[in-house]
Length: 99
Image (cartoon, rainbow, N blue to C red; front, side, top):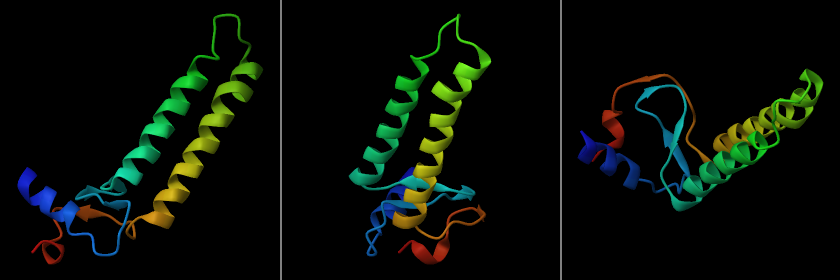
């Protein structure tokens, strides 16, 4: 199964950074650019998590953590839409995309 997925990821003549997942809805990174975007997103989430402490009020948490995470997530989804395959529900390997 991993071998078939690897073939699917490498079969990328359109140059997508993200290809559609085999199961469910969404994308998975298939190029170094896609992986870099995901790693930057995770790093930013971790950095914003360092702004939280026990003395933070609910309002401070909303503005220093929740709002930036929401904006980062929206940005990630927009990048995936722009640089990835058309998303949709999938219930297994797309037979027509594997040679």
